[in-house]
Amino acid sequence: MLNKISRASIVSNTKDFCFPIQRPHSGIPLSNGRQGLLIWGGGSTLKITVARAGFWDHRGGTPFRAAVTYPVLRDLLLSGREEELAEKFRSEKDGRSYARPCQIGAGRLEIVLRGKLLRASLGLRNGQVSMIVGMSRPHSASGSRGE
Image (cartoon, rainbow, N blue to C red):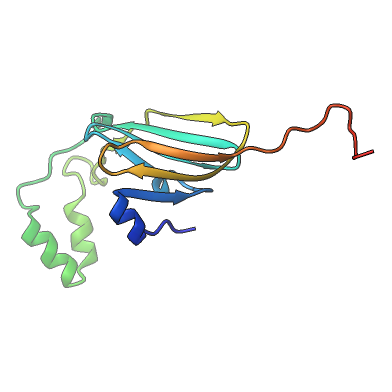
């Protein structure tokens, strides 16, 4: 389900979300520019994916050659010269593609709730997330059926 911004959300300075939210990148974002959280999940499982801007693996990174400039790459891309474009990204040393830095995930919390996740609201002024969890009715231990 897509989470669209409603007119009421704009007026109240909130962004509303409906669960389930199936993927982390569709989740509720919280960040201060360095530390970030994505809140998502469904059913009774609340998931919080944690990331940090500085968690990048730069091992094996190779500086690009001086000839690899934006105008050159743009020209090759727009003219459809795919092989020449790929050549610009090969290492002079061994001919393989450059190693790319990748982000290292910090982790994920999974919290099992007693109820079912229904909706959430992100306060755009204060960054506070409020959630509505539907609680199931308690079951009778005796198994009574209204007798």
